[in-house]
Image (cartoon, rainbow, N blue to C red; front, side, top):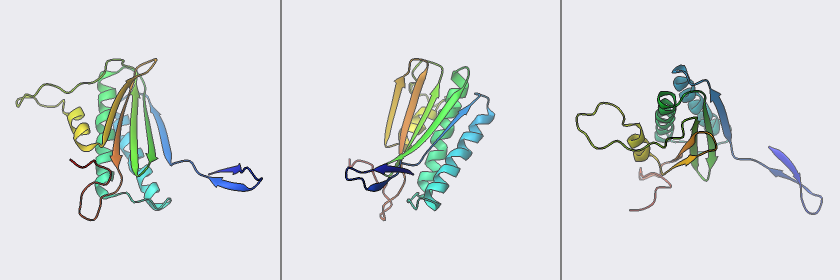
Length: 159
């Protein structure tokens, strides 16, 4: 939490949205570490900040983190950076890696085993973005934190 002085000399409280960042060496052990970081972050958000985080959101965030970090480890040499940020009832999962090649969904093939990570990420996310960086790329997916009483995902646009 940050203290700021208001226009009239009054002290006001200003809080930044909860966020966590980690850098990994790119080895396969970082996939589990990244999942644990996401779980710990959302558990803290629920317990400490009192924000609603559904079990679905926790599971989907773990899944998206796992898929994005796995792809970064598999296709990009070197380090991987994971950034989780809360904003407007959503968690933004961003993964940076050193490979400038943008991911794409593989062609439909009922015989294909694996390479479904991007399809999964697109299916469970409310938003998705890939952006080239000066070095490498950043892949971002956004997941709603709460479900409504009817079981629909909060934040998903109506069809």
